[in-house]
Length: 124
Image (cartoon, rainbow, N blue to C red; front, side, top):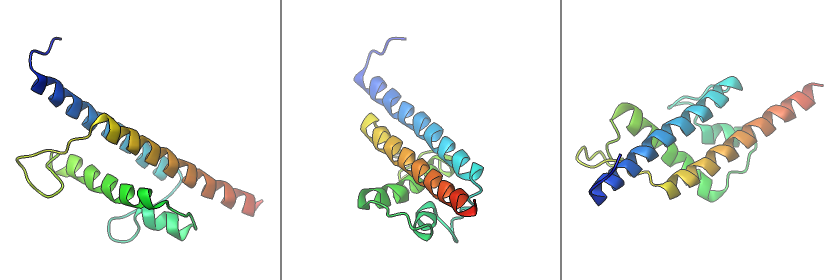
């Protein structure tokens, strides 16, 4: 496939960002569920769960955790409309954003696994 316009390339980069974000996020959510962690919008966010389990969340990741959830909800429920609710613009997830989310999600998985290991060691 050949692109004849820069706007076509930019559009595809954005679409790749969406698809990779959804895959990253689905893997994280599956890992969360596989560790019997029950999160909810009103009662317990991932950030809350980390704090309850005495995980020190780096400042940059606090904002990332909030943003990941907002983006997730926009992509799943609002067809990628911008976070401020503008239906005429869409969320732009560029490669550098995906790199940041990758490291955030890996960090979250490591923390979840660490908490699980501590519980196993405590029980034995």
